[in-house]
Image (tube, rainbow, N blue to C red):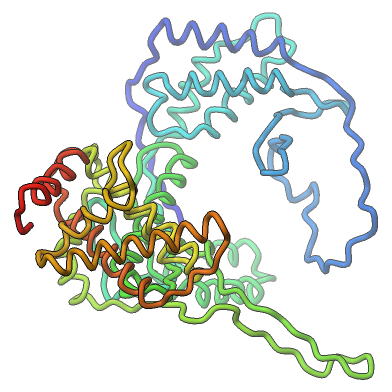
Length: 460
């Protein structure tokens, strides 16, 4: 859901030299135009048996369509428009030059903040199309600044997330996390019903389905200045970070085999298999079975959240504020992201790889042996007793051996006792790093403090 309000781009101006360079590159881009007949697409080897709903036709398209070619990964590789059964556009080398100009514009003030690469590319191509064949092209820099000023605004986005229900809204940094507003969902149908009263029942049925799908979820609310695509990308990125936080804070994080698929809604689904029993050429029975069990879902009371946020988890707020992270905060954030990715997977092999990578990222200096460097630092960080420290190091070495067998020999990870202890130790270690973020500026400061305890004989 998106709500916008007009915020003027301000009196921002483009540096004269920057504007001149952009205009020159724009004129050069016009020289790369290619005009060619419509490509003939190879027909399917046989008709599809897929059942389809209503087909979108020309009458459903409003305005001029944006046309592009993409490769098999979905990456745009050309942009064009159509005229008299011809495709006219930027292909191959021409499109490469368009992308280079997009990168240049994206690094130029004031267009370097609040605008997505997609917006800049479409805006440049819009200018390119309007000036195709012109002997005196208009100013590309003026066009960019005008379109940027029109698109710039404050956007309030709410991104639904799955597998967590909260009792009441709470704030962390600049982000509001709140239960989904069901009334707001119901109200989305009102404009459509007014425009199409003859289809009111169908529209309200669709709204009811939307409420069933989203009404129980939790939403991540963010307010972002910029154009719409940029705001959506930033809001989605924030929602992913919030779900990483929820996964790391969950009881599943210290387990070795309980997956917690808390993600922005639609990013995860429970895998199932379908089996049809056939007798006498008729389906007599249909069964659907889940492939993975032990999937975790969570309801969190406000009291629980309040308690957690008054502990070391309060330091999560630095990741959701409009500020610059210190090198150590950035390192901890990346480590938590990798750890949380492991918590989301039901595959213990992948879980071990993600969590081990998290620990290496956080506790290893360059050119150090992994087993002793990481294992010893974890032991000295989370335990004071000498024997328990040795046990933690031994467990780390066993777990690392399991990880190596998996990566190099595709062996199955199945040592439950070793893994259970490892994931508990790993979580405590990363939590201690999160808890101690205010004390250190750089990763080296953090590791030096641990090493001082280790080599100085301190108790931590």
